[in-house]
Amino acid sequence: SDSSGFKLVVNETGLRELGLTLEDVGQMRPILERDTTLIEGMVVGVVKDFHFTDMRSEIKPFAFAFDYAPKDYLHVKLSNSELASAVEAIQTVWNEQSNGNSMEYFFLEDTYAKHFAQEERLSDILLYITGLALFIACMGMFAVANMVIKDRRREIAIRKVLGASVSQVTRLVSQRFLLLVLVANLIAIPFAYLVVQRWLAEFAYQVQIGFLLYGLAAVGTLLLAAATVGFQSLRAAVNNPAPTLRSE
Image (cartoon, rainbow, N blue to C red; front, side, top):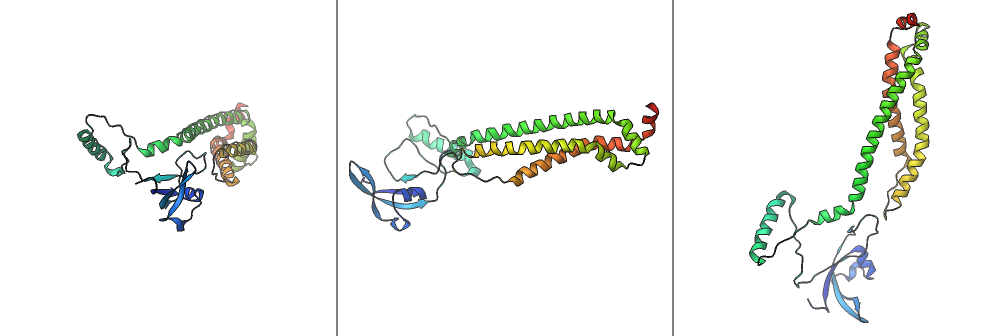
């Protein structure tokens, strides 16, 4: 095509940037200014806005230009189900037509994936750290609960002799730990909220994370703590108090 009538496919932001509307699609319009001269072109299609950079940047105007001159890249759409055979077929045709020049290729989705690699790595790291922290916390809580129960075994035995039920003994041992976990959540939730909000502020388009998610996280940690300490508490509650009282 000649320079006085090039054709473009633009995104929605690009259409607005050109000062055009959908009614201008398919019509020759002044599009490009070169050396104070307006060059006419035709928008032949409009695609929805999409991200072609990382998510920290706003969607920018984008245009696909039709140009039949030889270029350094060939763009080929392939089916994922036959990817390997398609690449092999392209390589064969290239070797027949390229006069010995080697073919280098890459997948566009891999290029886009690089924009999100940092967030994916951060997500994986946080997942591993969270899992490790929970494991260490549970092991520590299990050990501390065991020590506390050993220190209070005479008290527990006396309470059982006086008629305390299994649930009462379990609650007696567990409630202090659960209270500490609750206080820890009350301290951690505001801090986590501020960190998440600061991280989200780096992105051009943000989602709102409500306090329901933080509440569910708090409930989850309380249940995990209850299961960890409750096992030790229940074991102490069902033990026969007689041996403990005799040894004391």
